[in-house]
Image (cartoon, rainbow, N blue to C red):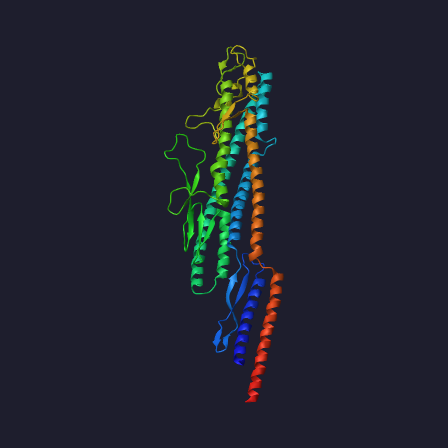
Length: 482
């Protein structure tokens, strides 16, 4: 009987020692990122059948259980993907908004006002070469500002494309890491041992993937996970499929080369566009394919409308050489572009004749009246002329307005998009924090709770040592009786 007590007590000591070791592991990793609380699960040993009935044989640790809730993980990762997308989009749109710097004295609104104002001053003094020179200067200023905007949009596109390439490389690396951990977990657990630390490592990678690419996770019976991106499988078991970035070059090429060529994300050997995207990957792709082209298209439309309206009026005027009458017909004020190289924000410039000679700037609309100012007044009046810009966005709703009004609506629309993205980023960041807090309530380590549990286990350990002492005393008594 005493040998049975010794065995039970010894098993209890070993079991509670393992429980204490598990508690110590939790306390030691309380601040370790990604660590999931572990619990040593105690289980009764198989009983032994005796003539007088079944006799218990003690306790053992059946497994070291990792405290994790799959549903809470899924909720957190969904929120993390939305948060990553919103934060990245908000940052990118804020950078685009910074290109225009409106309202300011250095912005397009002020530059257009100064151009119209210079022409109005020229109309007041038609024979002033100084006033003509100021008109030329203001026209160059407007053209240069268009160039600056377009250059900065191109720089933003370049940096966004570089970030997209880096993000895709990161996703591929993370996917390969998940596949490797799947293999190691399967090997470890098929040999009968828990792979808690490996599962923690895999969950950290999956968390990063969800924020970066908006992925979803499917847990398999064998302990591996499948990772879904869009509607396709990124990781399955120990295999992963790489993402690729490709330019969607139009085929056949249009006569007029597009300012921006869209990109697409493909998976594995498939040539098809991967959709739907999520996380930071979606935000960057949206900036490249939608936000920057939309802004550039609006600036190009403003530039081409400005050129066509000013040229249409300017070319009806006349210029004079000294007092020679009649005057000669004026040409274009801005370069009119060509069919294959139309006027854009990147190409708008003064007509070569105007750029070389300010006296070729027309003010008069009468070949026999050098002091006439009708053309000058007409060009100045374009400032408030309605429907000088007509633009059809991809949505299909036609938008018309004045030059200043169209530019103002462009900047205002961008500002509204920035505000909406910032609000989304705030909301989804809060949802991400709440999702993490919920799952930490299950998998996180609470040092106070662990210390309380340690005291309870310690009492059980002490009781087991007393049981050994009692068994020893019983054995000594039996020996004395022999």
